[in-house]
Image 1: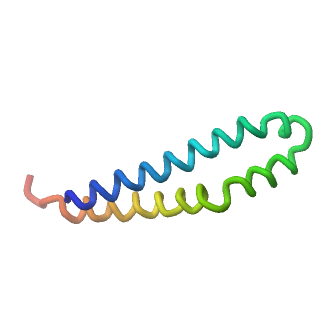
Image 2: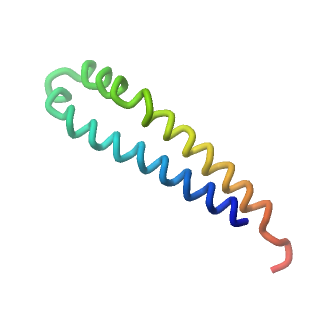
Image 3: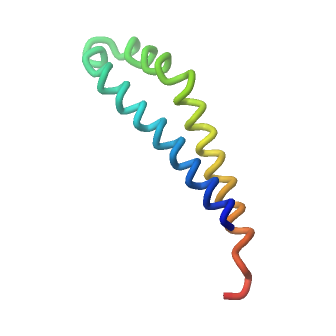
Length: 78
């Protein structure tokens, strides 16, 4: 049960890291979004692809695994 909660916390931190990087990049590229939408999305993808994207994916997978571990470890008798 404790391991599932730790994995869940790590997953939340990774997803939060991705979201914060997305907000930062979106604010940084807000002027470009007004001018050219295609360039905005290309630059946003280029900025987020290496580390933040994979951190978010690993974080979401970790959250799902943690939920499964926690649900399996809940006792049947309350």
